Image (cartoon, rainbow, N blue to C red; front, side, top):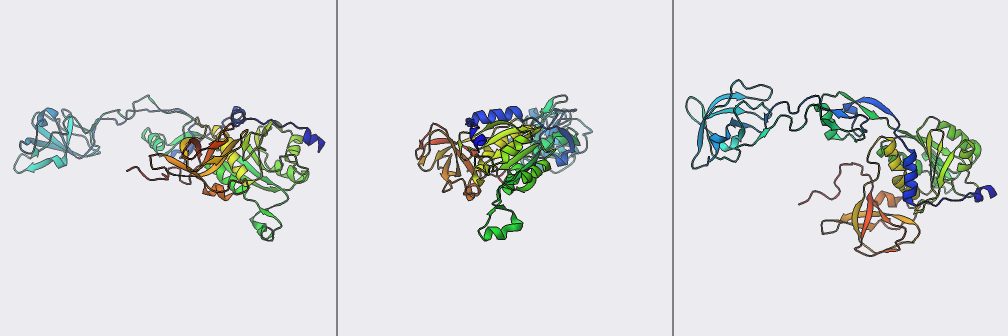
Length: 431
């Protein structure tokens, strides 16, 4: 006990702690995958286009390819009548060019014939009987329009995607457009998750929880889900008991992983022996304790090449410290350029009291504030053991160390929590 109490807590600010973590974290290497399997992965190479896209001027709609000079001034009362000399559909090429007084019927995506500089939409035309075929044009709004120019999207040799970019559906479409059947992406880091504590029970022993003799292990499941949303591969290592033999066996099972996340057992209590065992195995502890609530008993270090995050055991503390301090590191390991969590400005919907000296991360629901912005309302009681507060939350409201009170309506910063559907719009489209 004396040795454990002699350790000095670092009490870093959140920014200091995150900076030290990110200075240590690094991308874990690349692998090649088919682009059909690359969504959500991080691009590990620069992509240049081998061609112009589109490769030729093409029509943006169904209609008639014409010369602008022929259709300007056309109206319902004074239509312009042109001779239709050919027809071209997508996948074919025009056989003739457009001259004065002529038009070529054209479909969306078809190459624009020489001589034409406009495509008149079909709804502004009307067929005239007789031979040769003729059309009347009743509006000149399309003069000089509706042509997608060669290379207006991508130019041959141009850099179209940079390494470090997360591949979304749009990026996958670009890869297909430039003829890349596979692509180099950063390997998904493998993250070990270990719960510790004699009091914990997994689902297979839930009868002990029901009988009041154990506490359900929610942390390993919640953190595994969080790791998956961060682009990592979660490896649940089970529950280690509060003794050296059990801890050593579980730590040995983590060999070869990129990251180890432990929960609980890293404070100064008599049975909090996780860090002791890790240090005997060679852990190089970087820091312990952060000026934040919930989650101050947080630690970070390295065991060989493996990063080790020691998270508090309370469920809310574990998830909050993951969002604030671990998720950015996993983004860095996954090769992303944008590692910091997005923040938004909100207005608090009720007075909030805080305690100076610690940065607070409060669980809030977000709702429209009636003025085009968002209001943040507490999910309820904010105790670090109330795991339902995380399930109810849309975001973490950040109360800086020096702030003791936020007034109703005051502006503040919030960190949105990942949605089940990352593209989900929580509050609908604007009117």
